[in-house]
Amino acid sequence: MIFSVLVEVSLRPGIADPEGATIERALPALGFTGISSVRAGKAFRFDVDSGSEAEAVSTAQQLAERLLSNPVIEQCVVRVESSR
Image (tube, rainbow, N blue to C red; front, side):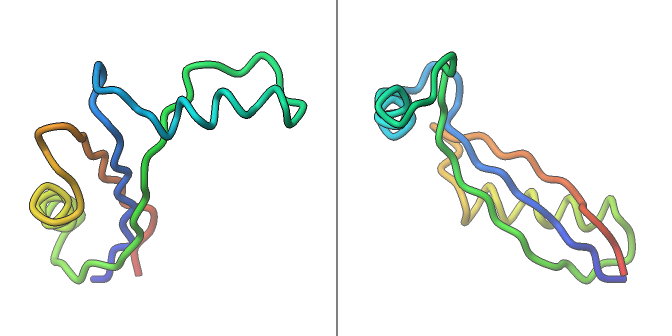
């Protein structure tokens, strides 16, 4: 079965996020008010051919931890969006 997976990678709490801070400082100049605590991250979408959803999540989690992120400063959230 093919599972469509979304991996979201973000900095761990307590790690400085200069990209998020830059975006947050720019918001008022663009007319956006009332927005705070901006954190930047990255998202990856891909398909996993696996026998079960649990196996697909496990494979994606391993990929995220070994290749897509730096586990020392980043955290990953893995979600299956759909299956075919």
